[in-house]
Image (cartoon, rainbow, N blue to C red):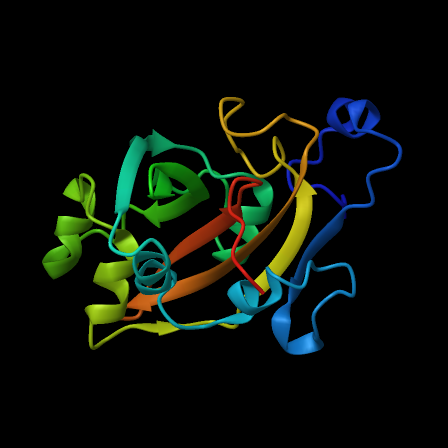
Length: 196
């Protein structure tokens, strides 16, 4: 299996040779030693990241929606959701900002079959934080967190937020609402500098 989610040989060839990527691995197995001390608590916290960011920003928090449209998940995302890449999904990408600075790039994969019935509102979130909705839903459960350190472009981070070869820490997990799955990945941008 490819070390990089999309299996793109050309991409791997173009990456900096000094980059030592750490692919998705469960937090339960212990954190990789290379995790920066100030990021470790954020990567392993299984509570609401939105709530923590609002507190850190002293209520100067906003969500900028970059896209929310029908698309194809990458192989790693499809695998995490136990579905094929041809399964119809909506991909939602947002930037979570604190005090006017981009802190987190979040990419969510929402299968069309999840956004039905009472969950149809997921189709029209606008700039409402998805995390806020997830943690308020009494039916919400989630699989264990996974963490990774990968190049920004492998994590689908737009060039405006990070150079393609920049190595970034991220976390992801599959959530279930009414036992219907969705995948949320959160990438910690270099502009996010929490105190230890």
